[in-house]
Length: 146
Image (cartoon, rainbow, N blue to C red; front, side, top):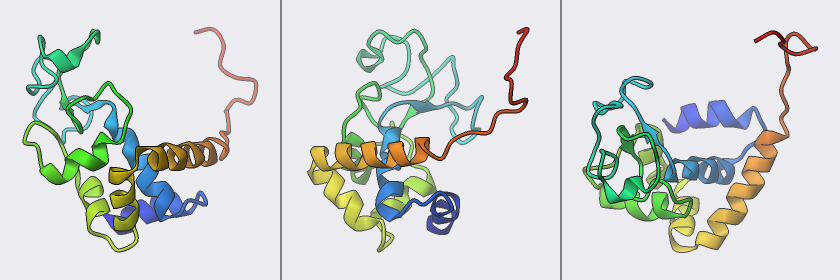
């Protein structure tokens, strides 16, 4: 998993800190059976944190799936704080788990668990860097008539 993450992100000028920070975006959102196939929960079922009636669902109109964090609608550093606890209601992909053990990723993972402001600063920088990679639109004039 570490090699895969580096293969994907290094070519965009990212470093290990950027990779760990961007992975923290898993603080929000969920994985769905219908999309990834990596979890058994779909749109019609979920975990204690994502099923219909769950307090963590707040005002979301879409229940189901499996989240990376308990409070999956709040962007904070809980991805880093909670993952080592191995909550059975949450998903941890191999590319998430490796952030806790790989020598290049681990120091950043631990820093972001302790310091939410450091995570926010690193995330903003990495997200900006990724956004500035640009996009190529085909056709160049855009898509019309939809």
